[in-house]
Length: 372
Ligand SMILES: *Cc1c(COP(=O)(O)O)cnc(C)c1O
Image (tube, rainbow, N blue to C red):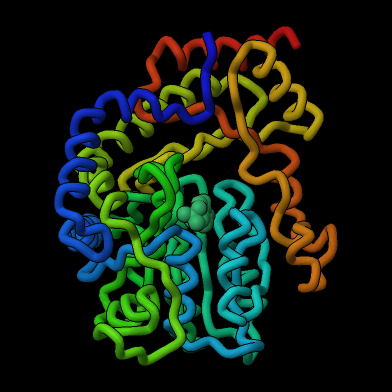
């Protein structure tokens, strides 16, 4: 048996006729840019997250770029980001000319730490950028309070958190902007790159829409230096199909995560917390912490020998990325993130994973710890 970390075959096999039909519909319409599929996706995806506006864009990275750009950040303005995230979170901040300020995360969920965030605020801080990492909704209330007290905006990186909710609030619904990625391996993935910004603020919506479309609101009248960061009509057509399944697929992920939690509970691993109605995670990844980095690396190799893929999300925290060296951070600055980078492992999880496949992973992980 070979088990991939993320297997998209099952869902694309399930949807292949619908996807093919969508392809033909768009090709026959000859509308490839800003057509009706996009409008439908924007409306329904925003509604799914209790938001009034959705703006389709070309990737999750571009969603962050246009949302941050819409806040009129100036050179030297600071945006607080967690040390443990995908590189694009900080890259987007740099691309709009602002400065990422890296802050450490909480040990259990790897969410941005609110007290360290408050301690990092300066007179140049403009935005806090929490990341709902691995599909765990960051508890937002402390950040909402801090943002109000210091007059800051919050932009959420929801790239891994489609449909995740905290206390009934979907991610992206309580701040100025939620930024999603439809990278193929995300919980809701396009057949290529795509993304979306959601918001309840009409000015934010208008500005983002213009920025993603060459800074224009009308054809040939450009009000700002923008981007060509539109979503493709074809990708929107595919995503409209997948949106019908995302709730059920997230439910499958939660069921698999619960099963891992139960079956791995006796092993010397730090498991993810149990999800509940207050922290309604969507398990983009199922991440456990080993006791040491040596154990983690050995486990990865052991699983590989048994044809089981695993991952590390992420092996290098932001402050140790060569591309962000100019920020002047050093090894040791963010110990929780460094520790996590050395000890976490992502086990296979995806909708369509059979119980038999999961049992095989559980059996091998158990065997590793029981018999080395
Ligand atoms: C995937 C991802 C992004 C970037 O999304 P793309 O669509 O690949 O540009 C940003 N932040 C996080 C946390 C991600 O996982």
